[in-house]
Image (cartoon, rainbow, N blue to C red; front, side, top):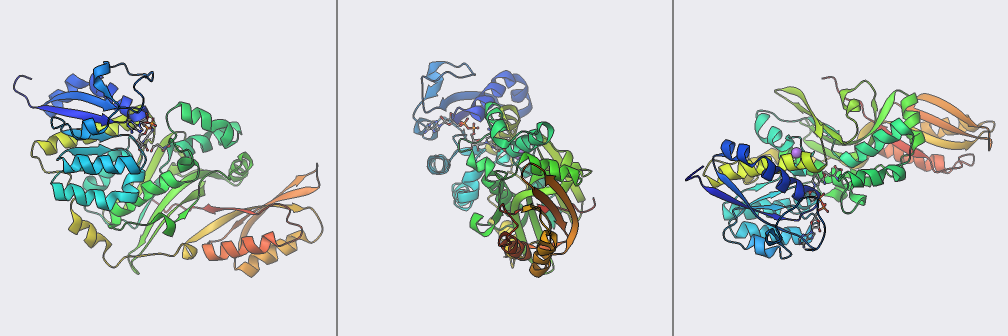
Length: 444
Ligand SMILES: NC(=O)C1=CN([C@@H]2O[C@H](COP(=O)(O)OP(=O)(O)OC[C@H]3O[C@@H](n4cnc5c(N)ncnc54)[C@H](O)[C@@H]3O)[C@@H](O)[C@H]2O)C=CC1
Ligand SMILES: N[C@@H](CC=O)C(=O)O
Ligand code: NA
């Protein structure tokens, strides 16, 4: 290693991911240095509380509670932003880029909200901004999309992009528990965001869908133009009912482009998916992304979507790319700085209105088990323009009510909303009607 260049790394935020990156670079340093042809120095990590006990032991001199001591340190080459959030993280990232540093991040919320500004800043400063860990944790999805599948245009990308939700849904299915009973375990395993609503209400996976949509289609989609629903309202009984109908419930991101009318639909919601589909077998903290390209056909990637080690793997892969870039190698084949390429991908593309999005549906209703109720309910469906495919009734002898489960043929969001509106006005319906979409995966 004599005479090899030294690359100095600073870490902002020393929580689950920050400590994982530190630990694995320390443990695997010799192999990494051999592969990259440089020496790696972990300079320091910025923390918010110097006195806090941590799983990873390091000298006091390696910690600072001033993150600017890292982004302004002229000796540091690579800054890993692992603080999370969008305010301070944005400021520190802009400052690090302005100081000529290469920045690596796992922060999907930041890229979703400020990606355009941050990519422009990296372009202006002539440096790179890497973000592999921001989508699907340890799965190399960003590299796959930008490099491995560069020959393709993508009519459909869909998948499971939130480890926490998938872990919860899997345990609900296997153990019949509610999400409240499981979320604490997900937190202990390091999967859950500091703000858990990002995971439970779908926003985290929506951030990731927005990033994939940009990389595949060159268009930044605003969250308020998207259908975003999390797993909070799903009960263990819905999971069991879905199973009875031959489905599993998964929180799915769907990015669909129609190349005929040039519309793009980006949405995030729980969906019933046939048990036999490979995506339905993606359980626990695993994520899965299915990419249908016009040249390659369908490619499916599965791997750990959250947790310390899987996420550290993605961050270290970006650090490796950053080392190459610092040494003068060109960046990714299509990098975040290639503004023209992304602009061209998105030219003439408009967003599909959420109401026009098509799907089949699952409805759960609780009704008073009385004469004529079925006729009223089926009339409400047909008045809304929905055609019923299957119906199952579960009696509740304790209170004389019944749970009715319906699946419908393919319709659209406008009709489904109309049906909910009509159903909740029916006198025998005694609980807010509940709907889930059914996702029919295309043949591979
Ligand atoms: N945990 C996971 O499985 C994954 C996390 N991510 C992302 O990685 C980032 C970090 O996540 P985690 O490590 O899980 O979060 P975390 O909450 O465990 O760690 C963040 C750390 O940053 C520290 N911090 C906050 N403000 C600070 C400041 N002003 N100065 C210094 N330190 C400060 C916090 O004290 C905390 O220790 C987030 O953007 C998250 O979305 C991405 C993929 C997976
Ligand atoms: N909270 C996120 C962490 C990884 O992005 C998740 O559960 O997927
Ligand atoms: Na990834």
